[in-house]
Amino acid sequence: MNGYSQTGPLIADDDGVLTLSFLLLPEYSMMSLLSITEPLRIANRIVGKEVFRWQCLSENGNPVIASNDMALEQSIHVDFCPSPKNVFVNASFRPEKYISETCIKWLRNLDRKKSVIGAIDTGCYALAKAKLLDGYKVTLHWEAKPAFQERYPYLNVSDELFKIDGNRITCAGGIAASDMVLYFIEYYCQSEVADLVCEQLITNGTRHHADRQRPSKSEKLNVYHPKVLKALELMDANIETPLATVHIAKVLSISIRQLERLFLQYLKVSPSAYYLKLRMEYAHYLLSDSGLSITEIALASGFSSTAHFSRRYRAFYGKTATQYRLLTLA
Image 1: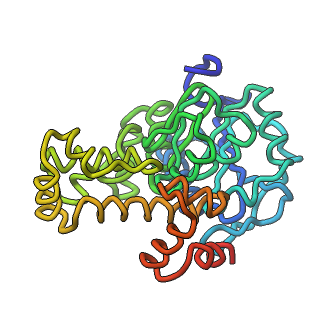
Image 2: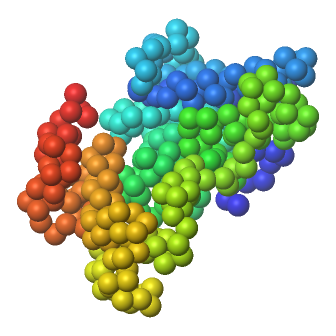
């Protein structure tokens, strides 16, 4: 564990209530925010007292437009809330566009004051830019993970639903945000209260923080052959420097012909075609969620030539990488 020791993952106010503060960046995930506040509201009602409080913050005190084009009316200017004890940066699409120097300085000041600092969905970008994640293990939404790792390759990123590492708390967002606060509710109000909250939400119960964000390859593809799964694992781990089919076959101790037969049987495509699809999907995520140049994205997805990458991308998606990026920036 990093940071400092404390009783429980959150810091209580002087009156004993646990206040969660959310710095909302434009295009934040309202679903994540509501997935946190609603379970907390229900927990307070079940317990019969205010165990948890919450508040929404913004850099200017104005309503912040979420990714669904809606806005909550109430938000507090960060200057009027200088020292929240538990703050979470809530972001979603294009987080780097909305991280200002004001935000960075504010977060660093909270770090000096030993606040718990967290992130929801892609809020990790703000913490990373402020250099507040060095030495910590973090998580964020699976779709944003490739771009984040390209930008911050030295950070330790997991696939967990949420991660508590000292005074850093990060969450993948979406419904995983409710899993995170159900953990808080269980910690501070006992498991029976968390169970009752789940009943009110009409859900079957809490998920463990280490549960996967997405189905495994075998579940997603309905493929359970060990040789095929090992080949897919090798491909996933070698996007930037693709392995030759002959090398994959050698690692699996089978012939190229046998490897090709297995892929045709279970995936209906050749190994090279499936590998190319993986690399193009990876590039697509980077175009959507990173500030990397197209040349950098081409290299990160295993293409030595930008022209070759552009031809492949257009063949896959019906438009050039440049055209797609312009659409995402509109």
